[in-house]
Length: 246
Image (cartoon, rainbow, N blue to C red; front, side, top):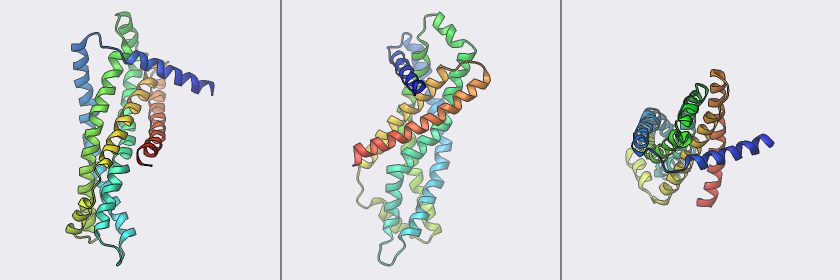
């Protein structure tokens, strides 16, 4: 219990150092562009692959449960659309990115800590927390919603491919995608995504920043970053769903 409270306290103290005005704005923006490429663009491939097959699987499962002479076939497209927008795209992609991005962030910052690069920045008078962590947070909060929107689109395309394999007509599937669309669902999904992006980058940065020891401890910090950021994402998924949809 004491360790948990200490970690929470250290986490918020680190955030206080992170959210300050960058001292060298030109270098900061160069770092931000680099992080957008590393965190966002480099994650595009895995997001597309996962979303494509996830959409197909959701459609096939929906078909197995909704094929009934009394139910119209367009409900399959409707169920696929709402499942992807409300839960699968924002939450599943966040958990995947917690593994990919979170482990990368923790190992990168942890390696800098154990090789004393962070100490060197502090000696030069640089706010290392602000310089290293803030660009990652901004890049993730900016680009994760883009990835989730792409995931929704690719997931629906994958759903269409899945519908073909279970003899659902394209017309019925597309009618379901368009039927009584509620724009707030997208707003809800993107709101969750921005919160998840903040959680993943800050929790992972925290475990990397306070790494002690050598290469083995960097691996341990990376594992903790993935595990705890995933847990916090799931907790906030419940909280945000209760607040925004209940």
